[in-house]
Image (tube, rainbow, N blue to C red; front, top):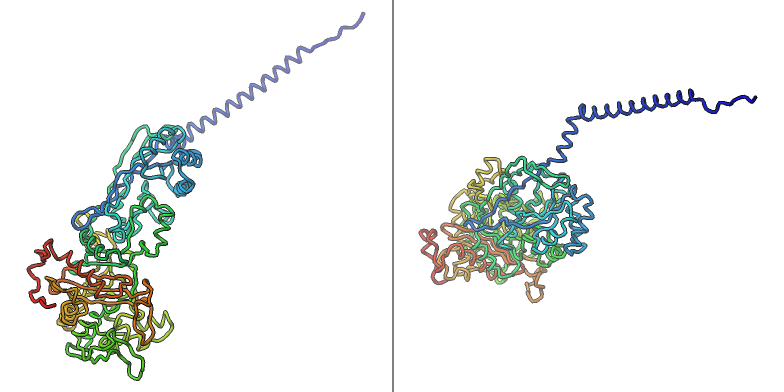
Length: 639
């Protein structure tokens, strides 16, 4: 009988299944334990950390930029204001693929590659996370509508209303008030990121730059709850920003317009100062430009047109223009000669039409080739006699000449708050030894006495030197600021809201009558029978103390006479004129420079006269009431 065969071992199979179930169960228990441990670690041990992360995803702190302080002229006319403007902002974190968002914006608004490049440049600037960055300003209604229709394609892109700087007077105060512009990378590195959170503009030039700390204000904050797409659901906490201080400048709009009108479209500069306070009444540099172009970002073509213009509208001639002062510094040289005792009121010099150093054949020509004969100090000023001042310069010597001229502010920055001011140059032995590695020659002293040679000044420095003669040496730095929210410049410095700048010491003459002698000579320039600018003073109801001057642009050879027909327009002499009035009670000091104007008395003098009239006379051509009580009665009637 055949033997039976067992086909399956049920006991072994059961044991195998049982073992596998045990292993599987253990594995499940192990995974469950690991999961529980991980949950415990996340939920208990790292609870605070993950709670903070969750809150940061849900709650954001948004900066609230302060409104910038306004700027007014002395009569309360708004010079710099803020006006609402709709801007397009992008938050890189909310936008996701922000490069794609920019492409969509360019497509929707039908813009070009230039705008696309500008948007990207603005977005790449370092900013706080989730902070919206304005990329396009002053949106039109059509642009706003296009963005609204395509909002679903533009996450992180919003149209917001913002206050944007506006200059209602346009180009009239571009060189004094200046303008604001977008914060660049260099500025971003030095600025306090907290103070400038949400702020995208900063003062670039003029008063806007110098008084940035006062005008800017203090940032505020909002703590907001957002959804997953970054939309604000509710405001949890609000801290109001502190607006910037409003500031009032000493500038006068009517006088500014009068100064620009007097220049009549010519390239030049006019600066008017109040001698009693140092306040700048008018500051015109022509041609000018519209500062509004720079607020939201000027286009490359527009900027290139301004930058490359042969007339240089961006160049501030009042503060940056360096010109030989010519004869306009002769009053200061005269005071130096009197005070040093090398001349007196009766000292006379014979003028044959030229001056020669002893033992030298070179002739230093007087502008009047035929000469003026015997010349006293008074006549030397009235006639602007070069020979007299050549001789006076040699008597003084370059060392004393440098000492006195620097006391009048030449060769140094003289203002309190005009930051772009150039220092100019008042040469000395030491300066030439260091800069030229040469000694000083007597011939260089000769021409320094008439404001030529190495000497370079700005129109502002000439106005200040003239104001010092008017105030008999009392130093008051020229300033734009009159007050800020009722605080004067001195109070602001005391409160450490404005950097303190020391005022140079007053110029104290050994005899006070020296000031009157110099002033009388300047009055003779305008009102005397032989004055070089006597046409300027014709019919004036007040006395003017003035001095004309010319500054060579190109040199002419020894013995050669200036012939305007042989000189290109832009190579002709600059015309200068300085003045203060009324001469017996000065209320205003003026410096005028007309590029290539050639004649100081014939071209720059009438410009100064128009500015003086605009300040001192009423609509009927009479002295204003505040000036009338002390007007001079002895104005020459026949000149």
